Length: 258
Image 1 (cartoon, rainbow, N blue to C red):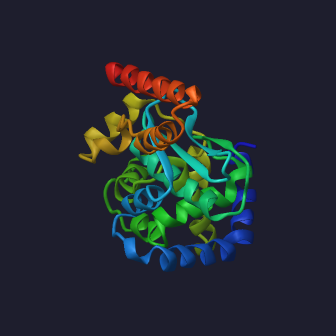
Image 2: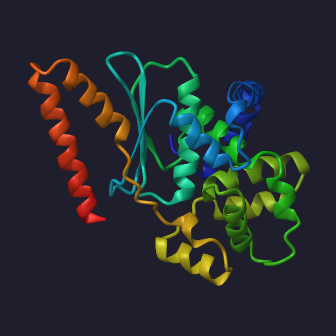
């Protein structure tokens, strides 16, 4: 079920139910990955994923954010669609780390729209990117006065998607008894922006335009190395050579289209 203005209050109730669980998971991340604790939340997430099977591919699909594929050996392959704006990529990094840490054994697709079924993963990702500073930052913005422009400043500061920021602000507005902010969020929650609209806002406000643009990174090295190793160890098995040739052709075609 998609998260919309209609069920926004239900989402906040759900957040309260899972808050302690997600806090414990964040403590676990801070403890387990303390050797790669980096000030940049998105860079830290990237380093965590790179310790596992992780590939980045630009795929021209407006809804496809990434995927988690459970391999025959039981390990998980994490896929990021780098044709999506960077703020979505960063959010999906942490979404996928949630699934890395849980004990789930199913492969699944990650869409860009927020879904009730993925609430724990999305809430975890939001907390890793937004922390507890978003509401204070938003409320202290003296300029601009326009609500949407203020949200654009939050996207630029916290490097998180529009809807993730609104959900977090809405939860804080309830906690702070800020009725006017709640109404403002409800009014704009289902709004969608074209790429041109987003870039217009960022250009006008002198924000970091790269955050709302795709990176188009193509990185399949770990998969290529794994198949090459299999092919070298079992030269009589043609399947590995065929897989390697298919991947190399795919990489070449993507490189040509960039």
